[in-house]
Image (cartoon, rainbow, N blue to C red; front, side, top):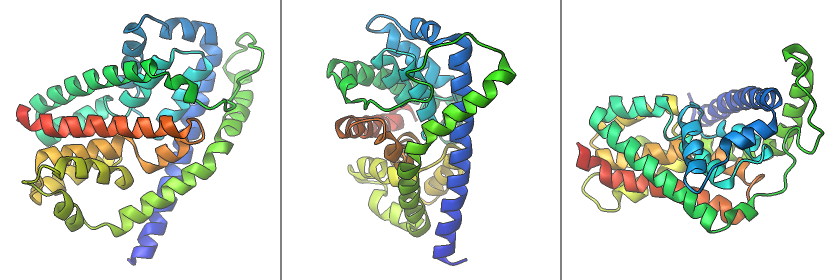
Length: 295
């Protein structure tokens, strides 16, 4: 198979999968918001300085989403008037603390490292969410039209009657995100198709202090999906890459893929997008240096 064909097939497969997943998750969130009501969701997510981000982390840990499908839930939280610290904590924790990624870490590195990873990621996410809130980054959320926002909230009419309006709201919310999604997927598919495994070993091989941060940065354009993290990690460790760089690469790719970052540009202003990427890199690099200590 030629590299061009491989890239095209990768792009088509990722596009179909992510659009279908995004629409499914978005519609489920719209229906959930309609069923529970925005006031109830806002009340549940509200809390003091620490309680709100802790609730955001808990919600992120219970939703096994990839980084791209985290966005519909984030938009639903913002629409419901959730505290910014809760939304920030959810955005960071959802792709990094869900049961699937924890299972991948346990299979790759053992349960002790998985527990250490969970602890490091939990604490780092909480501190980052508090820092985002303290820096006033809530003002960097764009005034985008969230599906169903700005409308008078009517009583729940039942599942079947709600399906059609929920679908219309979902399509309306998806439209402004399509272009950033396709741009991000194109870049990711090109990197995935043309970057060989030997390159990763050359730039982030064992024995170098810079291996961990380089691996974390390289992981972002690679878009290491949760389901592919295990085979990728096994291949790299068997080829000689240390567990620190492998960990950093997987977390960087799982937490801040290019498609997700591209889509976030439709919701966040540049400063907040850059802060998000920097936060994921901080988690990946911190974990990359600390995880070997648990081995």
